[in-house]
Length: 325
Image (spheres, one colour):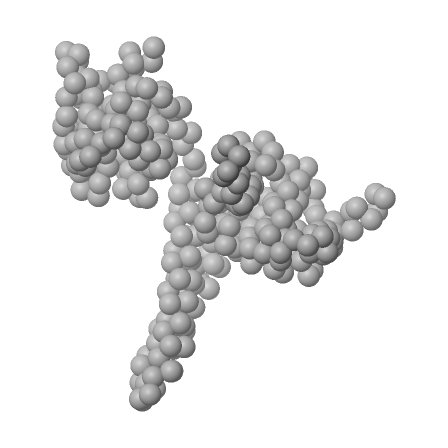
């Protein structure tokens, strides 16, 4: 079995790494080091060059370490945090500590033998950070806009607060617009042809195009439109058991929340401007589907079209069906 690779479970935090591994004497050992290059070197020295490191995705805290491992040509896996959480729950673990988590991650590596992580381009991490910053600014703009709306209902003078919030919103919008412009420029340098293809689809704007390209790493390893739909968390899921439990079919939502939100907004536009999406929406509504379900169907239609234009490297034609009929 793969255990001869000497798996090493790592629980990552902002300041430290808790590691659990089998040392050169074959004894299981726990160690805590700093989340720095000196700490990384200590890990490799104690665990050995043949170690396969396993960790969960932790936002940005694990990035420094995996960049170091990549430079050292070491084997490592970055596992979805939910998978690790469910694995720990499966063992009915009642207590939680960094040491225990590192041990369970080690056991996960031995039991599941996760695939070696396919490291994206460095550019991907930069563009993803830019994209996330744009989302954060959007949330802040929405938050302050809602506060202005609510504070206007107060039965006392609030003009000073309103003006202050309006200044903040104006500045946030300026920063957001600046980041969006920088991101578009970088994407044009990175995947210019793909960006043109994706945004040629009626209903997909520049923000949605950027989101799709970044989230899928330029549609890397994307073999079917169903995978793309699953990535966005828009694939249907059923809940049935025996003869008594008959749950409604819903979308799974196990995917990109940000991408799903942007696609929903795109679908609202596409059902008016995109001939294929409009026909689908109208047909479903006429059959009695509620409008929200029809909008989700339009989201999936958009993803199917986007996948088609990218894989065929052909600009979108709104009247393609009519021409071929």
